Amino acid sequence: MLATNGAQEAIILALRAVTQPGDIVAVESPSFPGILQALEVVGLRVIEIPTHPSDGISLEGLQLALEQWPLKACVVVPNHSNPMGARMSDERKQQLVSMLAAAGVPLIEDDIYGDLCRRGCRVPRCITGRGERI
Image 1 (tube, rainbow, N blue to C red):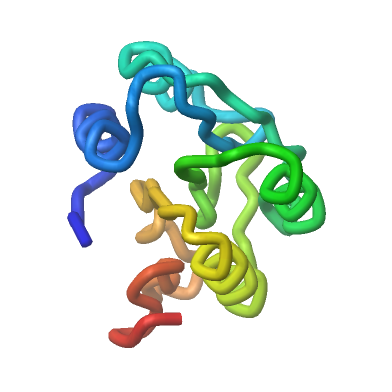
Image 2: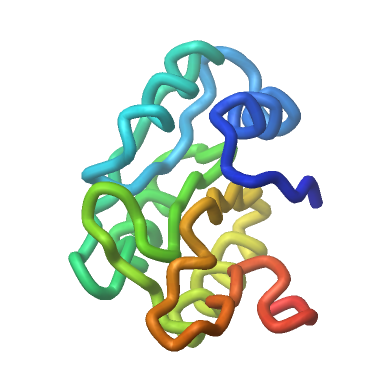
């Protein structure tokens, strides 16, 4: 795991670590333009997965993409995504991690907004959760 503060350069490094130019990567739609630019810099093709304004990436849509395409990675912003503002529940994060792990597809999680919580508590990440792997 490479922990960053969401810098676009870190996303590019993560993508280069797990993909080759021409590979297919799943992203949320709509997605932060910087993520799309990172994919373009690395020379990757994109499968856009619909995103719900409160639930985050469509797990059903992602499952269909996993069944139909040779995905090499999945890039998500599960906590307060930009531009939708969605925050995936811990249960949906667990489903996302399990789904991708079963398919052998790396998850690249941009958690730049994870500290934005009204209650003053840190929102758990997909990968590390509350100190453990979700």
